[in-house]
Length: 365
Image (cartoon, rainbow, N blue to C red; front, side, top):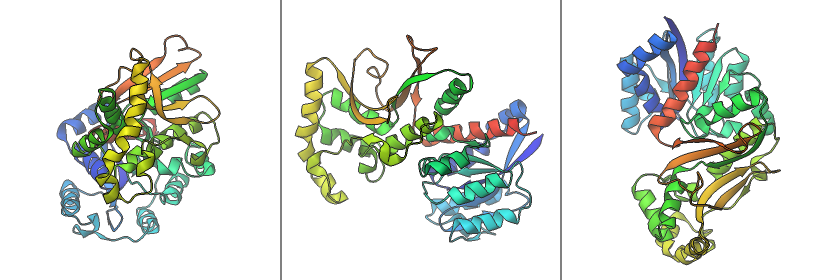
């Protein structure tokens, strides 16, 4: 049995779920039986604090860190923890641990600032697993440096636990030619579009998504489409397109009447967007098509926004919060490869991270 040391940046919903998953006896037993490894946390870090041990953090200290987070504090408030003002502090702590060969650093933050730390870990012989999309959608040069070796894995950045990244990588590695990729990459927008296609008002659909907990605290973070654009950009870059986020053509689902408002005003005036959005939906319905928020990849730049789909197409049949990805390639030209399932949620995202961790462990000599 090999013990694999790992560190975790970001101990929010996804990060804490990952820690709980790794502490589950059934999960630990299955991983040990199938992969012959045991994952041992050595470092936990959030925006304000850090908890680290060169010899590994036992279940009691991890539990205390999670309790501190649940109470609104920092992991650094757990016994033995300390403050951390930057990712340089995390790097200093990692250096004190000795060799990083075989060490896995998981980035479950939503930060733009982790790239230098991630590159340092890779340069030192360590591995990186990303749920954070931002390092891969910043500068093109950073993407190339992060992905230069297969020691950086990022399945959870697109489709959470769905095998989207792995599938595309396999197609490319085996010489297949990707003709197009169509994807619904937002469970939140899929839910809203399902409601709109049923004839519900835009304001009611957005409020229902908020009440169900599907949206970000500010629903415009979903409605603006930038998260979907990031996912589309990652897939394009995997195929060698040297694009930047600004190159992605994004049409948001924020009606023009509601643009530029602060959040309280936006929420109060939501019904003012009903006529604009519902007119588009009704026009599509009159022509026998449905609307879905889709990323279209295959042209010079990806195009993200509301897209008309046939009701009997894979995307047209989508309902609820599922994600779907449709690959058309030289091998899958007439009958496309379709991947569908939950594309958001703490459990499936943590599962995607864990799959990458197991894959890295199996690839280690």
